Length: 452
Image (cartoon, rainbow, N blue to C red):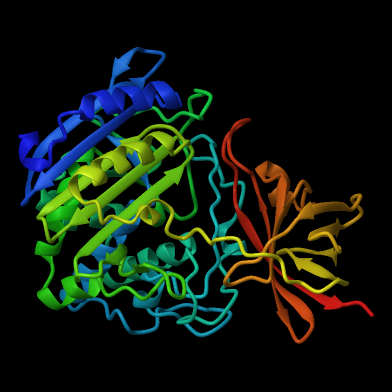
C-alpha cells in the first residue's frame, strides 16, 4: 500500500523517533486516496497516566482545523439558498457589516483573539467575548486571522437555518461524509476514545471552553480529517467548490492565500494544494489536500508543542508532494523586518472595555523601544516591524485590567505610523504554557500621539 504512495515505508520509524525527540505523547496519521482511506496509523500514548495507547480510532482536538468545517457549512448553506456569501451579516458593527465571504477569508475587520478557559461545565465564562467582539478596521481589506470572524459566521448560520451550530455540522457534514469520530464541543462525548491534551512538559489539560467554538472546538480522528479533505468538495456545486479555493494572498507577494476555510497554494505549474492547521492547549493538527494527486493527509498530535506535527508533515510531504510549501504550517506568521521607527516618544492610552490605561513608548537609538504602561516601571525591549506594522514588540508587563489579570501576563504592541502618530492594538496574552495553561489573547485599541 505504501509503495504506491511514494515509498512511505519508513513512517513507523520516523514517528517513533519524532515522539522520542520531542516528548509529544502521541501522533495519529492518515492518508486518503481518491475518496477512501488507505493509511491510518497512530503512535504513542493517548492517555499517558492510564497507559492507553493511541489508535487510528482515537479522536483528537482539531483546534483551527475546525474552520474548514465551518467554511464548508457556510458554503452548503449558500448552495441551499439559505445564505448569501456576499450579503452583509446582520448585527451591529464598529465599521461596515462584513459579508460571510469576507469573514471566512479573515477579512471582516476583526482582530486576532481567543479566550481559552478551564472552568467547570455550567459555570459563567470569566471573560465576556462581547467585550472584544469589535472590528478594529474596515472589512474587505487586509488579512487578519480571526476566531471572532468565524464565530460571526456561525451566528449567521444559526440565524439562517434555525439549527444549533454543532448539530448543523453533524447533520450536514459528518453524517453525509461518514466521519464517525467527529464531534463538536469542549470535550469529545464518545463512544470513540479521545486523546488527552498535554502541555509540552506533560501536564494534562482539563476541558477547554471558549467564546468562539466555531473557530476551534472540533474533534475527529485522523482518518475523519483525511476523508473530510477529500470528500467535502463533492457536497458542493462546482462553482462553490471552486470558490472555496479562490484565495486572495495572505501577505503581499506571498505564496499562500486564504479562501473559504482553506489555506491555498498554487504552484508554478498550476497545481493546487489546500490545507488548514490548528494549535491550542494540548493540540497540534494538520489537514492537507492534494487534489491533483487525489490524495489528502491528516496529522494530529496531543501536545501544544507543534514540533512533532511539523516533523511528521515535513516527512510525508517530502515523499508525497515535494512542492508543498512548509509555510502552510504557520501561514499567518508575519516575518520580522528591521524597526524603522524614528527616534522619539509617543503617549496615549490603551482602551479596555471599562477603562483607559496610560501608555508611553519611546524609540531608542539602539533599536529597542522603552514601554511605560500605567504606573509600572518602564522596560526597554527589542522591537521589529512587519509588512503590516511599523512597531511590533512583546514586553514583560501586566495590563492592569480584570480580564488580563486572569491569565494573560504578557503585553504586546502592534502599531502603525499615521501622520506622525501611532495607532493599532495592545495585546494581553500568555506566551506559551510551559507554566500553567494557555491563557486568553485579548486585543485592545491603542492610540498614541507624538510628544514634542
